[in-house]
Image (tube, rainbow over all chains, first blue to last red; front, side, top):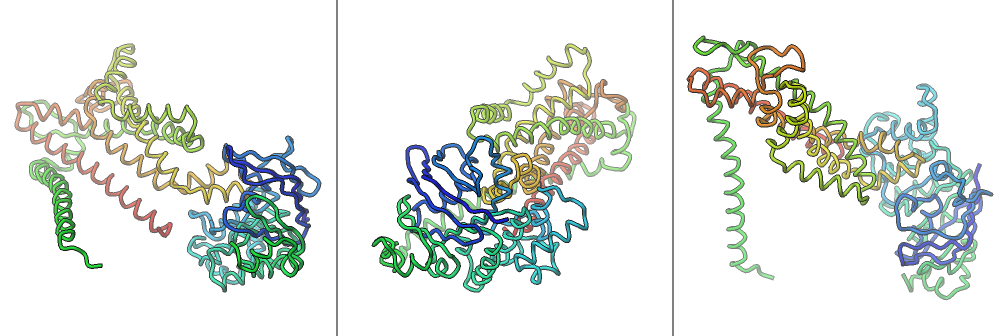
Length: 252
Length: 282
């Protein structure tokens, strides 16, 4: 079941440099929340705080609170590995595993969670590929390498792989940045489809994309949350002059 | 902007100089192969490859026991060095900035530069003296000690080629570190790891000093690992410096066999690299 994600006074710093300052917002369950803002403003840092990717490297310090549903993400008893299984992540550059076939890329996600019975596995892989609307394009070549697909197909394969883990939330870090318009359209259609069941937080540089796919939007500038609200409000009646300047293309 | 003729001439000169030097190194290899083949080919036959040496003056005889001795000692060395080296490399890969990692890296670099004679002496003191016998086991261990730092360093380089894009994808799926190493990093780097191991084996195959000091040599079949054992490099050495023309020609034959093995290992690893790159679409 989809869960909301709430940030309360989230601050992140790397060494002496503070990258995020007291950000508070709630991404509602089963909706798309877009994070917009110029490069280097802290959007990606914010996204990676939610599934504790910063834990993988020393040097990042996170303070404040993040709630996944009712659960505190940074609580002592929260296991980051367990947490990441509930939060899928899609990266800017499609990253299917280079040594695995299309089938095995998705199967790996399923195997991480126990099911290894062969017939069940094949069914589940098919289901994930179907939900990522990739099945029809790859059903005849499931056993070729995942990296042999086009960029847009690779990104949908990554979504299928993430679906295999059965998460409640999807974090997407500019998932269409390296895709052509047609592939982008496919991914956006998929996003709309997925947002019925999953909470999605998407970082994007593309204003039109944010306007098209999201219900809520947040504008981040220099590590601060400038404005947060429904996408409609934010784009039609921005409260802050900086938001207005950014979305109308006068800044950024 | 028009390019100056002077710059063009300098560029051309540099090309020629680099070309000559690179051709020279290929030429030297070709020359060595030519000499060894010319003098060694005559000695090679199936009997030569499969039979025991004969006493001086008696015709025939071969290098069968030396081939098997070398294979067994390299096998023991690899059995020791491959798991050891790759496990160490996994640690270096996972904790690249730790103090233990820099210490290990430093030790491996120093060890791979230590003359193999010293490694032979080390194992001689450690194993041959207390057990009072030269043995195939001691020879294998000496080769293993030689190969371990090489495999550790080459494996670390190969593991590092698995980019953080994929590692993060794995962690983001909720894979543990151990699962990421097992399901992603090792299989992705497998080709490269194999290449490193093969090159270490190729190097170990030609080592004389560590084997001479630990396994000595033997003119009989190896019956157990606690016995002295023959090996190709030691055989080439003893036959090569002997005054008997028959032995000298057998030394050339054995040298040809050894060089062929090393050459094949190198060619296969080269092929593995280009095959691996093609497969990954690089």
